[in-house]
Amino acid sequence: MVEKPEVEEKTIWHKLEDLPVSSLFLLVILSMCLTTLYPLGLPVPITKMSKDTFDAVNTLPQGSYIWIYNGYGSGTLAVHEPGLIVILRHAIQKGFKIILFSDSGPIMLFPRVLDAIKPDLERAKYVYGKDWVYLYIPGGEPVWATVFLDVWSVVMVEKDGIPFEKLPLMVEIKERGSTYKSMHIVYCQTAGSDVVDAFVRQVNVRYQAVTGVRLIFQILELMVPPARPYYEAGNTQGIMNGGLGAGEYETLLGRPGGGLKVTDLLSLAQLITIAYWAVGNVGFMMRRRITEQKRRD
Amino acid sequence: MKISFVDTLGLWIAAILTIGITSIAFKETLFSRWSERSYLATATAVSIAWFPTNLDRYILKRISPGGVWTPIGPTGGYIFVVFAVLVGLMAYGRYSRKYFWLYRYMLSLGVGTGVGVAMRGAIGANFIDQIKATFLNLLVPGDVYTSFNNIVMWVTVLSCLSYFIFTIKTIEHPTARMVSLLGRYLLMIAFGVSFGIANPTRINQYAGRIVFLLQEWLKLQA
Image (cartoon, rainbow over the protein chains, first blue to last red):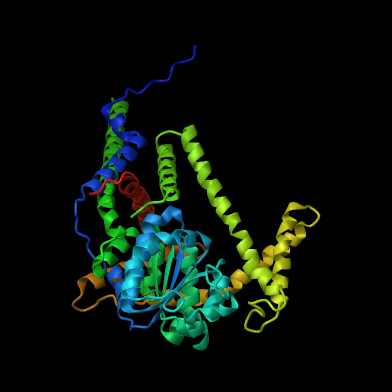
């Protein structure tokens, strides 16, 4: 006769150890709904990294050229869109010449950003083609390397197909010589670590010693630890730490927006996750203790 | 502000798809699968829709004599475009056993160009600058926090490096083994931090959808 395996009696500790993940999702979603409707207004401490990012933009003189690579898609919209809006607001406030460039995806998402910055553009009397422009440049590192050397050799039309000859800003860039001479700061938004490496190589390593160009990033929170050595080594002047970083930047600029809106949501959802983690671990340790005690008995 | 019918339709589709894809977290249903596939199908359709634009801007307008955007490049000439088109067409060799070798040439050209461009800055950014940044003062007068950080940095660098030394016999010495073990634990802490940070990242990404559902779709304001 086959001996039946001994079935371990389910205790409260078993239940705590195996809390259903769906209950965590439900609690996190509920907490986020509650904090959206009833904000907690928790303070947002400003980190040195965010302050450095802000200062990299803020200390440049009026008329500087800012190149913005907004390489994000709908998946990271909540993180990157506030980061783009706040940088654009700052750049307009400072009177910079703005050159945005990206692949097709962000172009399709740009009308949302344009709606948000429209009052800023109107207030500063910014004219498209003269003060700011948006280029459609598909491709990766080899393309960016050529863009920073001579943008006219890569594309000669902006995103909607208007030739560069009809855009005073692009003509101005051509007249100043190589494109990197019209690059005072580069702001890169991405969800890919390889893009961070590529921009450090093609902007910082190649041109910082020549022109003093500054390089700043807005990346996802999980990309910050691997990118941090670049910040410590001075390869990048600042990193906006995901949506939280955007919230800090909004605080520094004094223009609350989408970044600050989600910081409350994050705090409570994080607390719930940590509580689940702690409960699960307590359950695991207690169950192991009881099992070992039973075995000894 | 008047909202058009198309905007309202877009808002509803976005809301339904958001709820559908979120429901996967609880149970995979026909609704969740439909939402997921609709998203993928739309993304593919958008990519394909840009194809004629790329073909027109980067190829047709450039190789047509007297076109607005010719000649191309700092040195001019159509030869680069024609060459690029031919290399691009080689990618279709993948679909034939007989011409698979053409695909390999295309791939090696692409990889070679990428590596060549990246190598130019890689030595500086990933090697020299990182070594330079490691040479820190262990004791910074009047700044305990920085001193502590710098000491942690030194200990971490040395112990983690020692963990990866497999060929020298001295690593069998008890002290060296302890340093190596410390390196292993410090590496684990670093990996743990990276793993832990993934959680707020995903919550942050989803937070945007919650704000969208409540404030843009249901018009519930704080």
